[in-house]
Length: 180
Image (cartoon, rainbow, N blue to C red; front, side):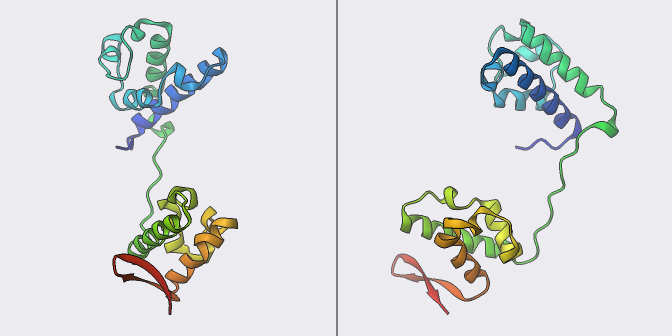
């Protein structure tokens, strides 16, 4: 689930900004003021009054009648009062070049293989966005997986894979890399 509509993004921005100010003023973690999932639900539902705020599943009972509840409703009203031109817009997702989706899938297999071999969680080495960038941009991709120890562990082999210098193959029930 993603927020895409400008009104949803505006409400998200204003309520999150209120939460940040409130957390700093009280010197408490942001989640103590209002949890992320509550902000997300508020942005989706955009309650206009305390009754509507109370109906949200992520809002604790009675919270809607507190000063915080009133402040959140005010933030929602401010966000919705913005002119359409001033509302935030979600960035358009760029279409990946043709063929990169398959390359990214191969990189995922290589990442899993590398992570298992070295006893490291795959996400510590690279995430799926990194793999998409490597598949699309190759050596030019500015991702952590192509620097430092991650490059030594995974990045070099990943680049060789997308350049056709290395392949993946099955040996029994295992997957391994083979130089071409």
